[in-house]
Length: 358
Image (tube, rainbow, N blue to C red; front, side):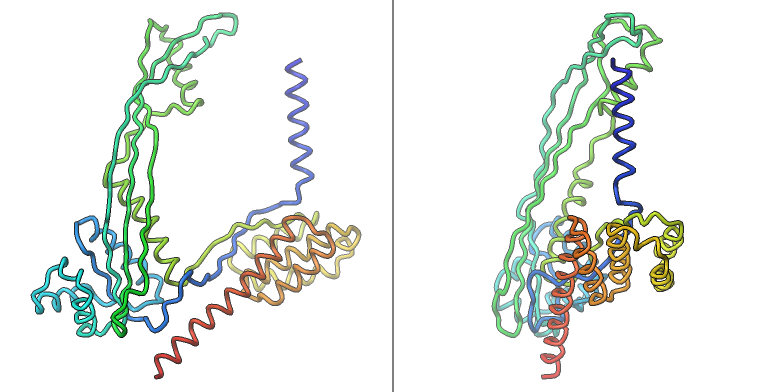
């Protein structure tokens, strides 16, 4: 009976795979506006307020914002020299007036002050028991395996404030928190004598069950991992950033599509567009409404990758009218959002240029 069930399930999976319209995975990269627009602030300085942990978060944030190229980040050495001349300590920067004074001397419009409020790691030890059946299918033997476990938990909380030098006001204050938790398995303990011939089988059985031995992440590794998440969140909050979304080319049931996909993956998307437009003369894409809808969906993907959002919108709209699947509707909604985001990015750019001219 189990044999027939296995064959039935295999056939079902095969049929489902054939029916699926998805053919190849592609990606679309686009620029997204920040959650908060910081008007009149382009030149910034970033400083820690306390421990070495704060300095590490600051350095990571500085690197990300320099790479992002939206803000001009003033060198830390220049700020340190001014602080030294004014005979201030980092704790002295808790005074808003002092921060503004340093900012004016450094020629910045805004200060980002970073503080690690809490970083804590905690370990919880235990033991799990596994009942492993013998590799001999004729035997009812079950081996009891005890495996020590270590659950390592951590929490990182970071506060940051943005101060406007021109208005002497705190214009943004926010705290980010990230958690880490992972279970680690250590060397198994055998409660009975096990034949040597069974050791490999039991080891493989444990691996399949997810019982893999690996060294726990260190405190430093966990701190870096959580800091990476928090600084990414800060960048997305205050600065435009690039996002990548996975999309799927839908099967047109024609050989030429493989060449077009290869051109896209080789970053020759303009050539892919030329090849795609030639397919409009292929009568096979007009025989089935679903295939015609897929053609327009794939054509919309190409326009979207090229950044021609209006053409992408028009093409996705045709696609949805022909066959309103969830994937097609999601593509249309995605392109609507991208058009709105592009207008918002333009407003940010124009707004800053007008302010700089004044």
